[in-house]
Image 1 (cartoon, one colour):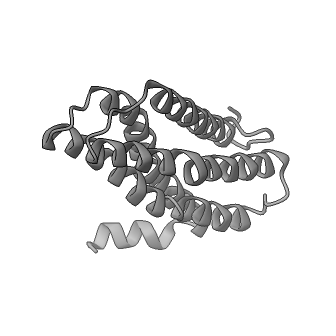
Image 2 (cartoon, rainbow, N blue to C red):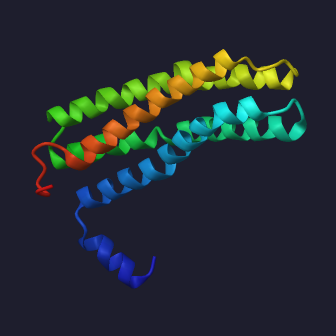
Length: 164
């Protein structure tokens, strides 16, 4: 790295570096999943059984799968940050951990498998039932709502030293 950047990193406490990495990971990893998952149901409803329509839906599903894997870095960095800050037992953090686990569970158990089902229907040139995309949109909405709640808790956490 450059001299100025090295100097800044040497002076920055470990907690600030971990917190910055945690926030960056959340933006880079969770953002694409929430957007692509939200776009998937309407794209699947619009998709014709042609290469372009199926390709768009397949791309959205791939984004969700890949970034879900990358998203594992968010709670890992979050635990490291919380440990460095000494807040592992805080109620707001325990709540955030539970909500994060619930969001991950919904993504893995409901969103990704239903996306695969819909994609399989499109690839086999079957019609995609409205019920399957409506259910998928519901689970995606719950997933997004959980992440939004975690984001608010992380920003406005009770007992924050930021004074916010």
